[in-house]
Length: 317
Image 1 (cartoon, rainbow, N blue to C red):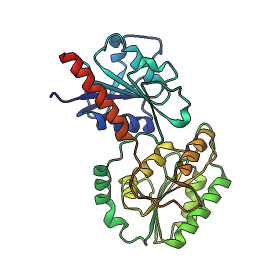
Image 2 (image 1 turned 45 degrees about the vertical axis):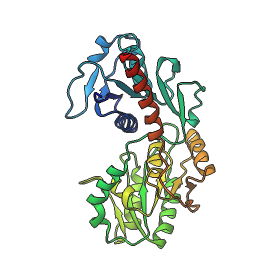
Image 3 (image 1 turned 135 degrees about the horizontal axis):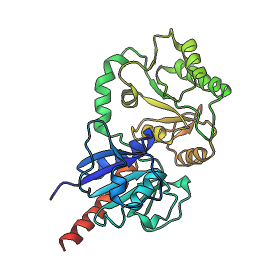
Image 4 (image 1 turned 30 degrees about the vertical axis):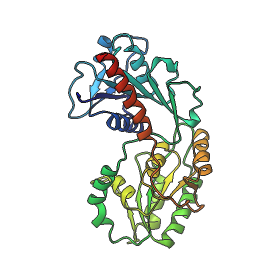
């Protein structure tokens, strides 16, 4: 059987790219990633949209059509819908609420808190899709095992986000968060990675509190990113709740997960679901024990592969 080809198309946001890439790689054999440049949403047609696709680094221009198109985000949903008449053989999957009729797609994958109406082609997931796999975790562990070997155990891995459009990361939040980290340090080591969104006041407080502590690693932004290594090698994980993607990736490791609640409304509903299902806790409450990874990406990918098989069978029939 010919290999399954896919395009992963977003508007370039890191979280959207990770979701689209993760699903595309889980469902297809060969994946090309594209970023959709700004364009009026009303312009239909593949010919006009093709020139708006910017390949990812190392990629080439779009040629032909893939078997599968995976999009994430409102503008890329419009792109996918614009291809409907010209790409009838392409299976089109969209991640997140497309803010348009779900009938425009073969499959729509949404989080429970998106409040998307139920439909036969809609899959509701508990966590966000992502590209964390056992293979990627193993590679991350290999690159960071020696560097983290000096840190005391149990090791708490800490991933810090920052303000969003709907919520801040106030100085009071920062003080509360540092207090939780102090308590975790009394029990073992810390491996901390801020993000580009992490406020300066949080970074400065981290440096003042732990900068001279040999039992704490703080990523300063230089050199290799330790994120995968932290996910792979920590005994437990503490993640800020502003990023549904980071929380979902933490749960995919199988480690106990605590979430620092930053107070964003929709994200609180997401966290309520995780706590209710015993998947995570609100820090500083102890993380529930875990017996294995929780990952919704394989379920969505399996549904896509069934659609792809049906499409191919229909072509050959």
